Length: 118
Image (cartoon, rainbow, N blue to C red; front, side, top):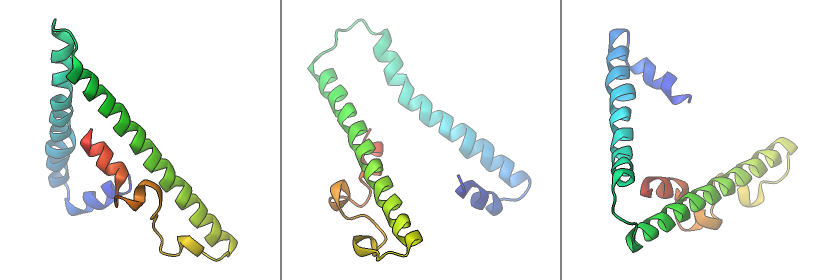
């Protein structure tokens, strides 16, 4: 990810090492642990699955599918936009530079919305 090179310039020497330990290692590890603990607790429980579990699973699968659709729509849009630029063709609906169709007509970042909602 190109952004880490930019962030690394913000902190020099030992400051980068502290940032790396506190944010990159520790904070992200705590976030992963927070996501994993409920799953582990559910797997160790003897309680039967219920309607709420089925609704949660269906919502999860729907959000994963919508995120994949949004990512695919963006990929196709960017591919065609850069193809037209390279070929010297008129940009047409790609002139604004960002997608406004499909799921992107309803949200500025539907892929992020689905990911965060997960």
